[in-house]
Length: 302
Image (cartoon, rainbow, N blue to C red; front, top):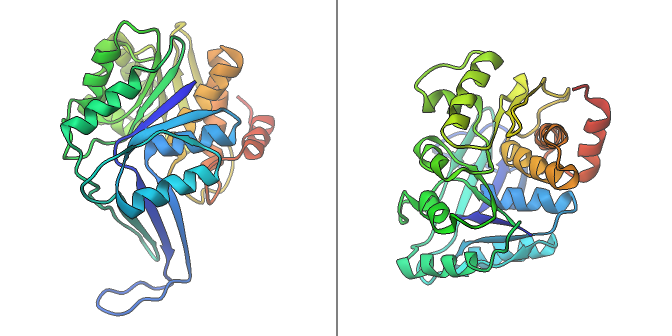
């Protein structure tokens, strides 16, 4: 079984305004509401690809109820923890001449709520996959990812971590199965500027030396690089297509890689699946579907 953890899920309210102006009433031309959060995105894409999974995380209030309802409508198994204070956040994404985002704060998460999460993690079995993705809200310890991985150390689990800077660097000593920084995040971790795939390979190898098994680096329009646990380096240009929405593309790449690995137990095939799944989401208004991924797999030359 695959489990995802999203500490601060959201309702993403996406609105299109033709010519947004401050200080006046603006009318939307189009609006949509999605469940959001990096782990939730991974769950939704895995579900689209035919891989059953369970979404963990914290929800609160009427917004939390709606997030869960939307996921259940999509057939996704949920096992969220309901917290007492506050509401799950609403993130507003305004698309006009420029894109603007206003992200909410989320509910209050108490130590006893975190303890309930650990009890759910106790149910994981050998061979399960756990995905830790996204930022940690201010109301939780910043060491949360590291604490979870330490708690689970010694278990025969495959843990994927999609986080930034210290959140990622601090977990490397626990040997995550997969990490997925993008090229800019990779540069930030080493206080340098990444100028191409050779730089990516050099610094991704450092992350491997620090403990990561597989390092998958997304580079937007420049493609992606995988330094695999078996010592191989896989590279790809980006598939051809029109980028419509970059939100969730990196999460989709994680989901695609895991799906490809589960299907084939082959890192090259997992890499191909990850690249095409990430691109399929970027080329779509929503998240990648199985058909869209299969079309890119058939047309893209690796």
